[in-house]
Length: 218
Image (cartoon, rainbow, N blue to C red; front, side, top):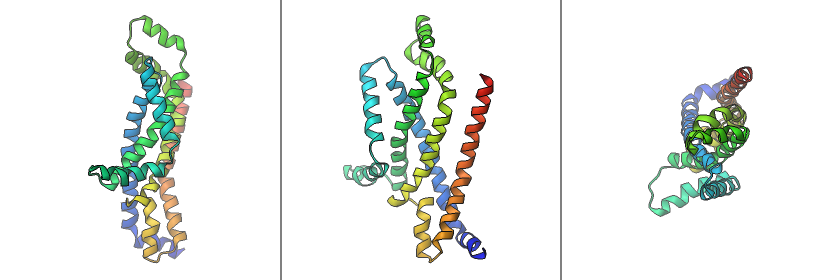
């Protein structure tokens, strides 16, 4: 037991640095994918055929591409185009590009739960598509979107570990550093698991709180 705790106390700064970068990567990608995913979701339900086609193409292309390939493209291919971008920024963009496709589908599914008559009535009052979407449809769809949206972000938090394979010091990179120091990998992996549980459980609690709150509101 003493050996288990020693792994953490002797390497505390490495764990702090790794999980700090994980949280930064998660927050940046979460905001980015929410913004991009919302725009794509609006395209998917747009009355303009070209926008619907673009949104559908993006979602189908990205969702069927392994995340590792998205990382590899941004880390190795983009610099070949004389675009200067560091590994951390590449990882954040990769997660944003990938996760936004899933956010888009959550939003589209949520919009489809709202009765069509709501949008038709709003349009009859002279509202534009943007007004109908932001003022009428999305507020009502939000309740249906929370559970799957939180699941998408929880999955994204776990996906941040892929960045370790592309020279980003985050939680997923800790085992490699520990191996060089000769630390027992079993204890290292247990501490990383505990760290991710600490990060994920508040998201699960928030999801359940919002579900209970809106269930009562109905």
